[in-house]
Amino acid sequence: MKRVDDFRLRFGRQELVPIVIGGMGVDISTAELALEVARLGGIGHISDAMVQTVSDRRFDTKFVSEKLKKYKTNAANTATNPMCPSTSR
Image 1 (tube, rainbow, N blue to C red):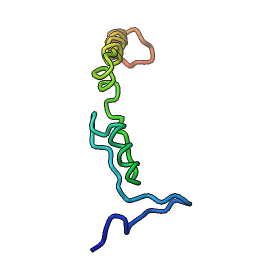
Image 2: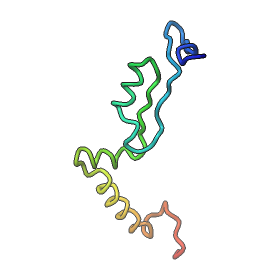
Image 3: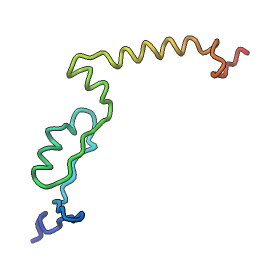
C-alpha cells in the first residue's frame, strides 16, 4: 500500500509531503491550520477571501463599514465626476 510519504515533492534541497491545504473559504484556512500542515511537512495556504470582514469580526475593526461610507460618497458624486460616464449628460 502506498503512503503519503511515498510521494514527497522535491524543490531544490527541500522536500515536502504532498499535503496541500487551503483555499477553503472565509475564516477556515487560518494561520493555525496552515502552520499545522507545515509542521507535518506539507504546504499550508492562508485564505485571504474577505480578509477585511474577518478582521472586523475578530479584531473589532471598522474597515468594511468605513470603505462602504467612502463608496457611497463616491457613488453619490458620479454625476459631477468627469471621469464617470453619466446618462444625464
